[in-house]
Length: 423
Image (cartoon, rainbow, N blue to C red):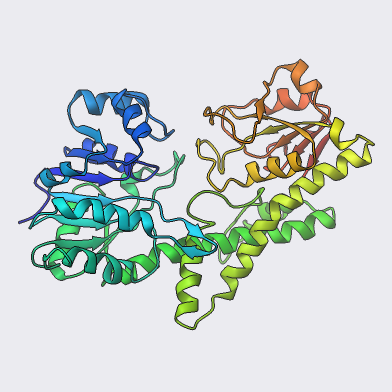
């Protein structure tokens, strides 16, 4: 039996991975049973409202109206699914992996698990999780993995907010506990994604995700660190990068920022370093990259404070307008956000900070207030601090009406007028 014939698919976890995957499955003809323990999320979806920039209200409404998507908190729906995909968070607690969401999801599934179902884990985790944690939990019910239940691991590779590459075009790495498990996950995802990359085991597939995000953390942290030197020497790291990337071989451009954020890059590498310590192989480069990444928001905040002090503006009298508090461009996610960390550091110094973020429209944390880009509001600020370069912002107007612009994103590179400090 193959799973390319359309059947119900249950997705556990309707966040930044699960909901876009649900949308893609519906587009390919599947009925998706979306399960999330967050009642507010479920209620919002059933009201035909999205909470993600990557999935529109119209798309949610269309899926529900066509009875192709059923959001619920009821795990019993799993009994009518042919395949089950776990897309729950995997946070860190004091640099130690917290798999409680995965365990809770599997425990919620177990009472309704039936023979012949395919169970896939997509959550990012350290090598060994599928074999050593999930397999024993499933078999505790008396079901044999590879014979009764087909267990697979396929790391999520979504890039939230990206309009350059469609999710369906990102090659899908798949693995299974057995040959039959691998075949079944390949059949399902082969009917959705354009390219399937089969690997020999879940341990390999889990390592793939850890390697991808560890490499990004290390490279971004490196460029942020060398930017500290460039800044000290009054050299534009952006100009350096633009020249360096003209080399056709051997150089990949990475760009400085207020720091790495989100739920993947600052988190996943420490799953790998944790398992490395357990295996007696400390991954010191990941550790150092993490230290560098954590200090970058302090560097940005200090640059703001230094400017205020140079202008003899008391910190408690200063007014700063921060543009962008999400962790990256064009998404509404503030998890592990470095720009938000910069804002919080300034608040700790009793500096009056307000925020402009056209993408993040949820309630602001830490008692933050919003400002607009009206000329009178910009002129009232001592510094307009650009932390994220969201699309469709008229930077020229901001520069024209601001007393001082501090730019961490190089969006002012083509402007010569105005008081601009590029960090």
